[in-house]
Length: 366
Image 1 (cartoon, rainbow, N blue to C red):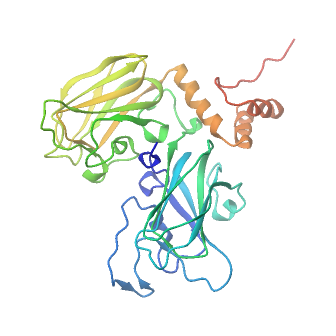
Image 2 (cartoon, one colour):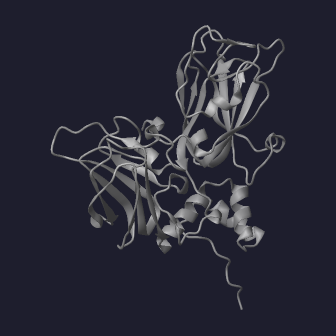
């Protein structure tokens, strides 16, 4: 699988932030997570030299390395990392490595220095002016990553592709967006993504411009375009929002929704007329579903798709267990203790993961 098709967990658009860098003399650390592709204008000089769309440190005159720490906008399981050295040719770092940490709350850079950093990408050579991809095989959920460049130089972008894993302690499982990327939903099928990724449909926040939505090529046949969303977990969809904001001459004329129940598909919203540049809301009634397919007729673009509803008991179990199974052992134990289990019982349960049911305190024997 090409991991670059997965969401960028570190993107500024998803709420990521570059919390700290030990040096950024030539170019600011914040550029690392800009969602836009890097750009370059030759012979464009500022007070510190050529202006680069990336993070660039000064030339080292003593042993050492440079580092930047990123808080992921969407904590989750990392499948791959891209260290993009676009336009850095004689000033890119020859080596890098990347580590991940799982830290609860909102730690400061000083507190993160003492975190339990785990290797995601080993010390690896880099090429200049290149998107350097690295596969990651680690099932743990991470909240932060740390990029180390050896010894110095410039990196245009850091992309951290993976699958978001939501913390259920901050969710109302009886009322949430079942299609939200930040809650763990994913796009699992799409007919066409010529202009932009369908993952934009379920991204956080409102689309600011047309390019932040999903847009297909113009159809010249009698068929129609569609996308399929695997929901965060099984649930009942009560309200759908189909947002065509910014799509004016290229919005779909109509749309419909169907939901997957086992191996069958049932109608949730019949083919319904849409308006350009409009947030449409529709009340729905239907069974519990695991996936929702949106068909647009015949083609066009949409900014966002929201599917509000409630998780079923099965869905709640799946979402909570997904989170518990991807936490570091110490964090999973702490979460169970917070839920009322004794420390020794919690630690024993965590040692026997994966969970398929939500752990509960055992009734005392009488």
